[in-house]
Figure 1 (cartoon, rainbow, N blue to C red):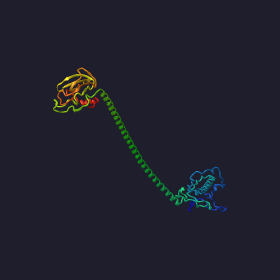
Figure 2 (figure 1 turned 90 degrees about the horizontal axis):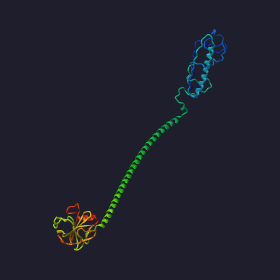
Figure 3 (figure 1 turned 180 degrees about the vertical axis):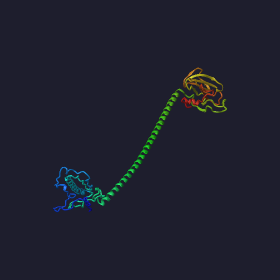
Figure 4 (figure 1 turned 60 degrees about the horizontal axis):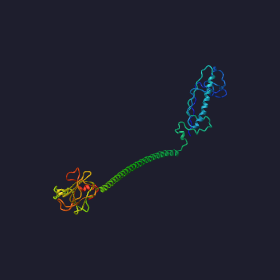
Length: 356
């Protein structure tokens, strides 16, 4: 195992004494030959001044590694003792300025003792970080593999998250579409229900109106009646033919045997009764609203002008007088707003709830 390089030699001073002393020893910390004017040598005793921390360029190189730190501290202690000793000897000399002593930087110093094992010291400038000390190549490969697996797991997780997000968007879109469809269907159902309700309401209103109309016609039927019974309709209003002087038929013909009773269709007043040329014997019944009912071709007249009659009263009998081809009742209806031709008697009777 690599060891720290040897410490550099102490700087050489030309005046350093190299001769042996009388007892056969070479001075260790003294520099230069002994001067006669220096006086006698004194034994060095540590004092407050000499034990004070020395300031100056006594720097020790930064140590690396765990084991080297302890050994470098030992060397540093030796160097400090040497520096302190030199400073004490320089202070003991009189008449001369003190000599500045500096120790070179020690980047890495081995153990000063022969018995110390230097095999555990890490070489200076080792590229291995303390965190990686003791890590085998298999563990390094395992760490690289773990990093790859972590990256792969992260990529897979990101892909799964993106897939989940896409599926969530699709699901949300489907839910929105379903909700929109459900809302549209609900609106359609609501519209259909409203339409059905409106139709039912309209139908109910129509049925109610029809019911009211039926009730009104039933009431009118009690107030109005057909002019005769046991009859046959032979000619209707507006029918064309040469038999009529106007070129078309102006009334409604009820064919019935001669002598069949003729009745007042409604309450009114007799305004005319007698012979009327081509109409034969004719009776005119004027109702309260001014409508005139003409009864023509009668065989006999049972009322007189100015007489008040009620619904169903007999006012005459069927005959064949005037311009006719057979016994029948020729009925005409004239309103105050109609012309001389009158209106359709069939329609008027039906409006009164009657069905000839």
